[in-house]
Image (cartoon, rainbow, N blue to C red; front, side):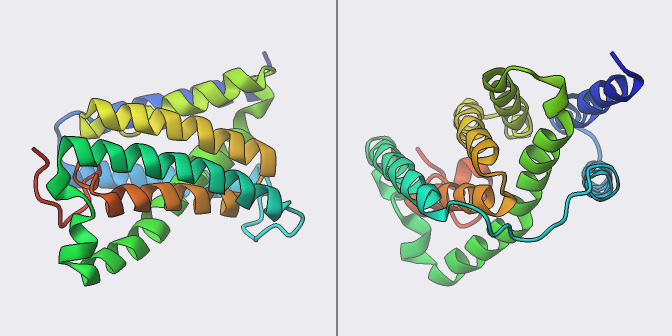
Length: 214
């Protein structure tokens, strides 16, 4: 293994294993914020300097294929999650949009631009462009991405969150490898995440405005 690839392995371990696990440990929250911010700045720096990524919307994407695929998967998500909330806690179904529409719209905006976009920069754009050289098997590559994406949500200490983010990681990883677009995968991620908030599963993802699910 070359020195460059050895460095990438160490980098991968620190950014995608050590850092997420540390966030699940109890220590000063501002130190955690500083660690996350430092990691994100490092990711942006590497993308610009080493990977020569330009943060522009790609024009040569088959958007028709993307929207067709998204329509099918989103319909499945809508049916599954609506059924889940209906049977687990019917009172939570569409709770925030019904009771606090202004908060609902505000959270959709904040989540999309301040949570989804940074996550996709780190876990799709950086991860796939930086570590693809280390993996010959694309299926294994996507699986590993889903594992570390789920690990990033370990601090929620919620098994359902870990399962959902693992499934999301599989979907988002496939989308990025197929379309090579941060914009496309961010749209997909935002749609699913915002839907979970909309349908009434926001509390488990720390969205505000939800009454505790019974």
